[in-house]
Amino acid sequence: MHKHTHKYTTHTYTTRTRTHACTGHGVYTWANGNVYEGEFEDGLLTGRGTKTWAGGAKYTGTWDHGRRSGKAKYTWASGNSFRGQFDNGVRNGRGTKRLLDGTRYV
Image (cartoon, rainbow, N blue to C red):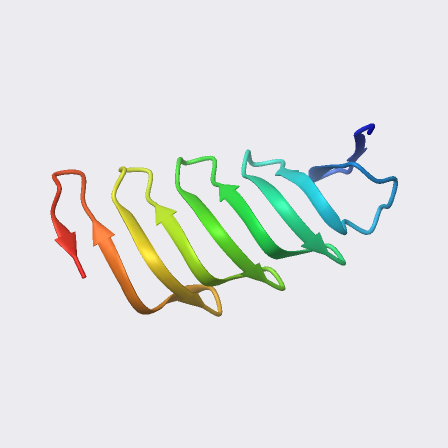
């Protein structure tokens, strides 16, 4: 299967289909260096995927219409991490924060 790359002024989207609607699995790269690889629906991050920010932070989990949602792991650039539930783009509910020194907060 061939990859198709669509380059725009502010971002690049690479997919296995010829569509410009950003639907299905693909890689989206912003001009500022942020990168998302995962599922899209009508141009929005929807489904499983990983977003890595240029500054080093990383979110791996589910997305709902462009917002972090469901079970996921967020890692700050420092290496500290949170594994748990997200809703409407923010941490929500149960989860575990883990610091580099091994300290855990449940």
